[in-house]
Image (cartoon, rainbow over all chains, first blue to last red; front, side, top):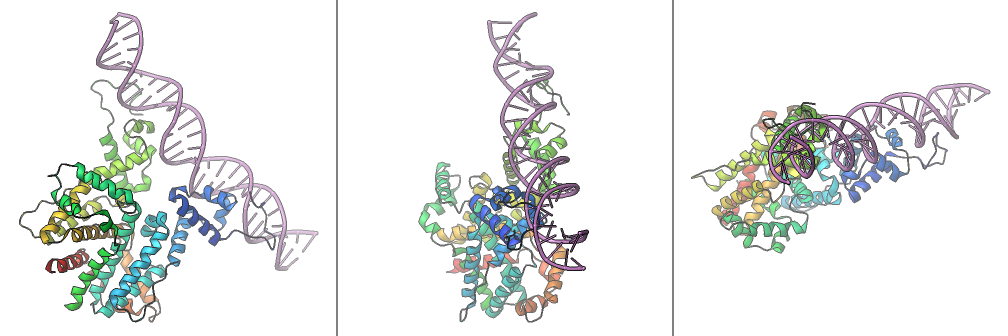
Length: 221
Length: 221
DNA sequence: ACCATAAATCTACGATGTAGATTTATGGTG
DNA sequence: CACCATAAATCTACATCGTAGATTTATGGT
């Protein structure tokens, strides 16, 4: 294809794991995760499909490598003189930004994080520190940490594939709700009838504030 | 294979959409989602692969059909004389039971629910009713509902693929944490050092209680 | 001069989803 | 009774996928 077989010349540019992962990530970002095949990746790299296997054992390793790359882009925010709530908010914002930057990889990302990954440990340490500082007991810290992470993952998922994420879905939801017999879903009718679309989409962080309010009841106790 | 081609005789048993979906679900439950291919499904049904296409347009329809079946198994609990917290707890328990009954389908399930599905609307109505009854304002109802669902989805995901779900993962986590330099993750060391495995796994619902505590601050306000 | 070795290519295999043609008998119609 | 559109399945075939195995080519070390 691009290069001929044979050992590369001294100044010759060789394929690298980093280059492969970066290109794969680019394909996933621009064309979706189904568009990523070894052969498709190879043609984009200008290389024979099997050339990839010199640098990665199989496709699973390619996927995990992408997860690794994306997580390595993640930096836990460093904040001074901010209370625990501010720290949790900052973390949530960083995490949201991360998954938003690679929407097509989210599902695979969330379902394939290794608990041993450095980024995961860093996250745990960051949240533990903030929550200990808030005055929670050990078991409370674990519970709160798990809730925050579960919520963020669930939110990310909903945003990438659920009703959220696409603005027109709201419209569909409203028209559907209104097309149904009025007595069928009275509570939803009342609730959503009192709100407009702009209000609903205005703030991503309302749910997080609810979590923070819950945690705070533990702080006072 | 089992039957010969040709129009079926009067009393002949024919393949049905329901039968196909049930067998597919059984394969996924017992052998994992990767084990489900059209050909594999056909041999289990004792039928030619292409016979399936008389009843379902393609594999995506098969998958969506399975989601539909699983969700149709879901019944929102009917409770009398229970406060809003009890209703939310009952719902969470039902939802957890649902995803737990088909662990291998969870990821696809969560990422392919249609907002228009009857079960989804029923869930929305159920939670809206409980939360309105609790005394929340419309926007608060929406926020609380979204949080509960996002959390439950995130939890289900973590249970099916994350550190949770497999008991030995805890052990790995502990040994990993202890193998690292002590000053590296001081907060996690302190937090997890104060707890044993049994305490951590004791209760699934601690995180939900945290959410309920948060919502309650809105009720009082 | 020789040769193990690195980085790629070429060839080939089995599995997958599915389009298209074919088989077989049915129940309705002249 | 003869005929035929139609239903439910099968058979055949193709493009695509991941990847095992053999091959090509030049390198740097001995």
